[in-house]
Length: 548
Image 1 (tube, rainbow, N blue to C red):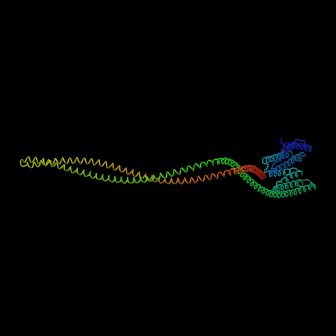
Image 2: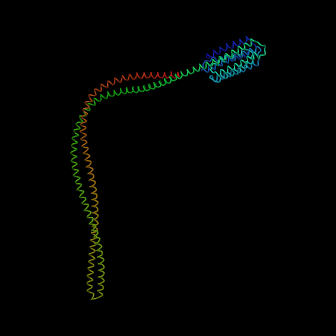
Image 3: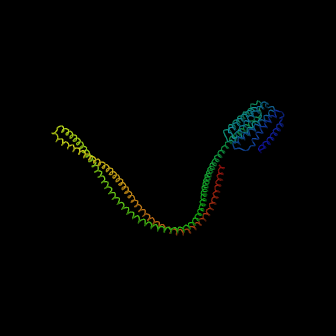
């Protein structure tokens, strides 16, 4: 059970006991008198429970105050109505209706308040219900106490600093009050009573003065509130500006701290790498000393190899010069061979021409012999005919017969001779064909030989070019060998210098190692400082956010 709930129960019990005691003291002995008191106690319990809640912003506190004041007024009003009903001034029906209306208004207010404690509508609703209930009380109760219950509520409305709302409430209250007092005095239908009339006038004057005071106070509060709001606004703007500047500074500090932390991390890593590399360099320097000694021996061996290489290059150059001379001689032989081959080719072509002419003449002789053979056959035929005719002629034709026989013999011999000539021509043609084939083979062989000679000449030319390139390479090798010898001598000098620098490097490495160890310690210290700065920047950011 919370502390507020315990306090509410305690106050409620005390409140109920006090209300019941007052009810019995004024003569509330009937159920109609006790029932309103019980209802008042229940409403008072809810009201007290609400008033015991202290939390909330300014608007919530204002709404709670008017609900509390109006609740108290309703309790007083119900208590007064119960007393008036007990004295017979008002009817029980009116009291019951008043209790019902009051309960409805009360629970409606409480519902609105509980639903939204910072409601902007609640103050208007409470004011309207106050005016309605004030009208009901003022025109149904003939007692001046009814005028007094409006004062606390109007006073509580001044905290809203709303002049128009206060004017509406005050004017409505004054009109109802004046109307009620006129009804209570002049229009009461009773005998004129200066004391009663004077009290009414005093109440009216007091209400008007109090209304003026409320309006003026509200105006002053509004003015002071506006001044405070302006000052608070300016102060808030200044604070926000300072807060923004602080946040910007915090972000910059945080950013710089992060960058510094990254740089320190990189620096620490670099220092560690430097130490590692220095260790490697130390080890490498020791190895270099050994390597320098080895290199001295190697350079001496290189010098011996260079001398041997120079001798070999000289031998190669001598051999190359001899090869060049042999190559030139071979090229001359190839030129002579090429000339002879060309001469053979020309001679072979001449032989081919002569053989062709011989073949052509042989063909012509064959044609002639064939013509002679035809003539001898015809002559033989004619001689045969002449012999036959000479036989027919008898003695007269004998001499002609002898001539015909001689002609026949001559024709036969001519035929044999032409046959022999044909055979000889045939043999010549065969020999000519063989000679043509041989000449063609010779021609092909000469062409192949010419091609081989040409290819060989090209090879000799390419070989000559390569030989000259080889000579250039030999010259370059000789030049490079000389440069290598110079470089070797320079390396020997550098080795001497390296040997001297190695000792100096060892001393520098030792000093660099000491400096790196010192830097590593400083980097670690700087990292701790940057970490503290980052934490301080975060604290500044938290404070600035809280102030904002």
